[in-house]
Image (cartoon, rainbow, N blue to C red; front, top):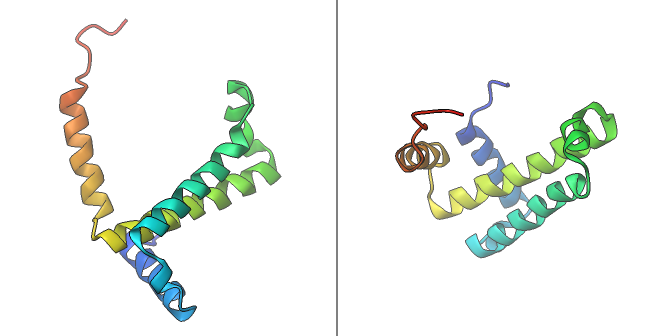
Length: 111
């Protein structure tokens, strides 16, 4: 992991878009749609692979590059969408995990 933080990355993304005059197009709707396109491009890498092949995808340098690149695109659009909507992604995830832990308790008897 790097020493980068989400707030710094979000600021960098906002500055990148502003410098290119893209900010007017970065509406929540457009960002959500772009996020879905990038998530689909990530899924495409794994489409039709067996579970074993998908587990080994990072051992292929070309596929590993594509996975990292698409993960970055997904995260970039997610962070931009969160900024546009005023969502603190870390707080939202922590809240969601608390609800999930209550909703899906650890089974008493694992088997």
